Length: 446
Image 1 (cartoon, rainbow, N blue to C red):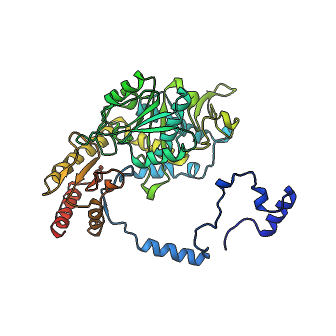
Image 2 (cartoon, rainbow, N blue to C red):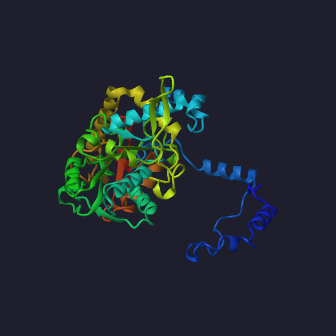
């Protein structure tokens, strides 16, 4: 039961029909350096019973009872049951794509409302109907800046989520971009944007709050970018925007973020949704789908997909992006969550996260031998410096029922003894005190 759709006979008939002898001849136009000259390094296929048994064994080795203080881009937020009830309705969960507007008015309207909410959230004029995730949204924002300015230099703050930067480098590896990092100050954990060399840059990329939970000077980054004729791309956690100024107000030209915290579970990494918003003057450069409002021939309000400069609709060389879809169901869940919270609820969410982060800071900084690495305000995330290897401490804490981390030595030289501690509205004072006690016991036993 290998589920390969084509039999050997199917392959032979296809080769004969197109007039080639074998697969090698069929692929002869592909450069040799791009061909894999060996067999795939994968284990033999499993039958269905073997596969189910294998998955059951993997699941048996997992724990779902850990108190989650992990962060680094994915956060354990409360998921209101009303969101699941609304987004899980068959009209949304079973629909495919809204190509036929006459059959998809409900989905198109939901996406239009999602876009409106994202614009309000980020302080922007235009949003698309979502992208795959936050890192993909950052890539598309950088590509927009490159297209708009005709430049190929990209300056990225070292406090942007490292996995986002890795995805950016992978996506753009064949485009000839010069990706330069602007390094953070080792005492403050933020980039001194006033001193960053933005000469010839298509854009500067700033994260606020940043990977360390610290608040960057977005206005200074915007001034530096605009003085150099560059765009400013801001990566912003949407759950912070009930209490922080929106990226648009602070001077960003494009704002992106990861939207999973809005109505979607952590789900072991996905599916998530990328948030993407910008100014009206850049609307023709926006990737992916945009749901628009119009009037039908009877003068009634109607919704359509509009400005479809995607590779499915125009010549590939002229497309703004090869992204041809969006995360409809996750976007609808995000819209339901934002609508349920409202402005006051979103502010309340941010306030609770900030207060509990402050409480965690006071408790963790009192641990003997430990310290909070960076001074200054933080939102939802702290960098804790511990004696010895932080990665080993993270592994030991899991045996005590606490999921901490990640260890920062994976990405930053000199921070091998540091780990992130993420505190959302779900983390109670009891949870925080329990984590502190677990760390104390591990340090005593080490």
